[in-house]
Length: 236
Image (cartoon, rainbow, N blue to C red; front, side, top):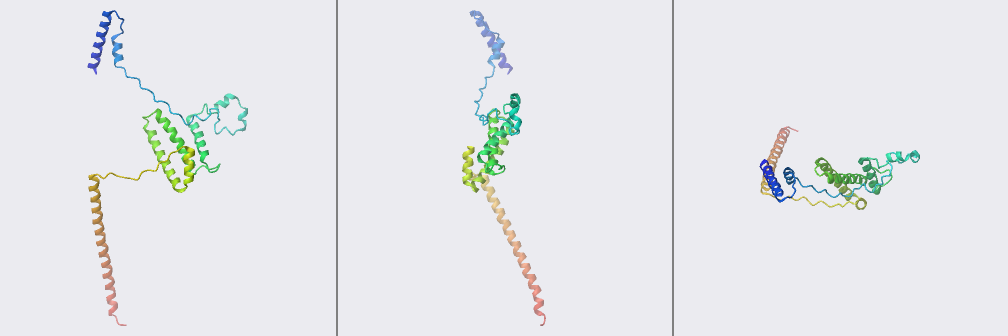
């Protein structure tokens, strides 16, 4: 590292001397050395469209939307109670309810499979937007994968029980469900040897259990025969 800096500094001094001899104004050699070691600026990733863009900022929070006095308050108070000043968590709650209203069976339905899938879908999309901005956040990536597995499990259960509701849920929430492929494992030499050994152990244990059961049956038959012999010799 030091050798490279020294070499770059010498090159900078030589370039300065050549520029001075030619009558060209030159910059400081240390500045040129620093510029030669400057890191390139990373290009920012293009922003992906957020699921919260379609929520109007003038919408009031859920706790204050049904208050009858809200129409008489000042505009500044309305702005404080609206989504314009709300946090990301409050906006996500509104988005969850909007997605749940599309698949809700009744106005009071809060625990059906479709509603739970809608809630999980909103959380997954919020985590995807977060990971697009912060790709090294491993904790949230692990959390998103866990939520995706839970969503797949619910979709699979809904697909087996009510296929028409499953299709409507995927259409309303814009979800594409793919059937998981059957489990296939490439047989390696180590795996085949281990499988053959397990089968051999299983057969040996099976033989030993069969011999023990045979001995137990023979012992019970002999005991029954010994009990029956004295009874045969007694006079009637």
